[in-house]
Image 1 (cartoon, rainbow, N blue to C red):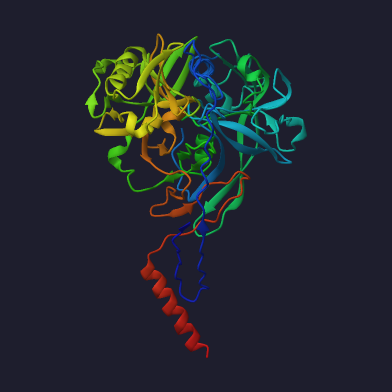
Image 2 (cartoon, rainbow, N blue to C red):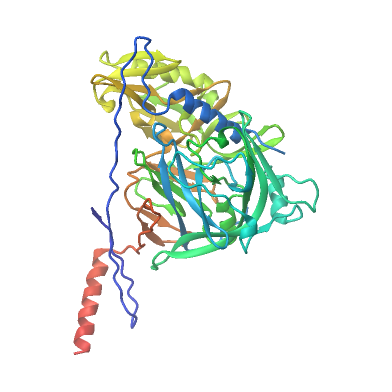
Amino acid sequence: MNPLQVIVPLVATAVIVAHLAVFSAAAMAGGSFPAKLTLERAVPVRGVGLEHLKARDRARHGRMLVGSSSSSTANVSRVVEFPVEGSWNPLTVGLYYTRVTLGNPPKEFYVQIDTGSDILWVTCNPCNGCPTSSGLNITLELFNPDNSSTASQISCSDERCKSAIQSGEAVCSNSSSMCSYSLQYGDGSSTSGYYVSDTLYFNTTTGIEQTANSSATVFFGCSNSVSGDLTKSDRAVDGIFGFGPQDVSVISQLSSLGVTPKVFSHCLKGSDSGGGILVLGEIVEPGISMLSYLQILFVTVATANFLRVHYNLNLESIAVNGQTVPINSSVFTTSSTQGTIVDSGTTLAYLAEEAYDPFVNAIVASLSSSVQSLVTKGNQCFVTSSSVNESFPSVTLNFMGNASMPLKPEDYLLQQGSVDNDIIWCIGWQKNQGQGFTILGDIVLKDKIFVYDLANQQIGWVNYDCSLAVNVTTSVKNTYANRNQMDASGSSPAAFWKRQPADIAVFVVYIFILAILHR
């Protein structure tokens, strides 16, 4: 149990109220690891195998790079929060998702948290190919604009549609038709539909107030057709919540409406129980300094007459146990065909093809003789009875501006099973075959606070226990709210101003004086 600090605003002749709160850190659940190695030296898989994970990520990268044909931040003082469910662990869930409430009457939808795309879209009625059940034990829903009294279709003559067309997020046949979109997947999967405008409901924290219900009118995708992996029910959700920087994204829309600052943050729990924190606002914690913020380059990748904007970091080198891996620095140079992308919609991590083998060789070379190395189905794996931190080296990603991202073995390894008392670990970073892009997925993003400052085109991070509370600031200087994580039911804890113990002492004296005056 960690006591939250108490904040008490002192205003003359006003009623003084002291708010106290206590939160509990969520328990971190583990899993068992069955199976033994067979004579064929195939790694026994706990849950989902690496081949399936790579295939799913390949489909995801197709969505990132293939498709069909901002306003300044207002002076706002509200923090918008969303619950986080799911887990990075591909052997259990393999994705993080949240819930959004849309329409009138309000209806709740589960959507994947995706920093690699812009559009918020949900499956709509009717929908061709949409799954009707999910292996995530959630109830899938369909949005029906006809059943919402506040819904309206976006026409091609609408300025919002024109803006989406310019960024490649919409298509139109003529000015009088509905504003449509069509996203194509690399494996042939796709989603398509049209844009609607309706009410989005969310929780906000403003100043000393407790969390309040708020809403705003936004436009989002109404998908009436999906194909390929989107039709599968094993990890099906109701859609995707894009947190990209373009005008069509919800974060950009709410910022232009003056509802939130143009900054969002997440802290994704790495335990099997998953969950975490997602807020439209800036998480401020010790260790996130200006030195650890990097300039975002909004890289536009042109494929199939389509432009996509990504959060790209200027990676310069990789170190294993403090030794720089011999990789030509030009491999990481940012261009339209290469760069380092931060993408919460990808489960694993993918190194540019020319960087992968030197990285794996450096890991293998640093291992002690007690660790057995083996290759199974093209994946580099290891067998050891020692703890992962004792057996494997640390890794550091070094970025332009003297910023670095230290990584633990669990940030690049995936536990795949066990044999007797030995644990089988496989490198969870994969070779981005034929590609110059390095993609940092959930295996790297977990157990860290990430802040995306779209207004100033900066990004920062720090290692953090995401089961703990965080401090969130809005664009109003020196305004803070203390946020605990959302629980699985989506209930929201109270927010409090922060104040020093000396101020509490002043409050006690003030109350004592009032008691004497009223005797």
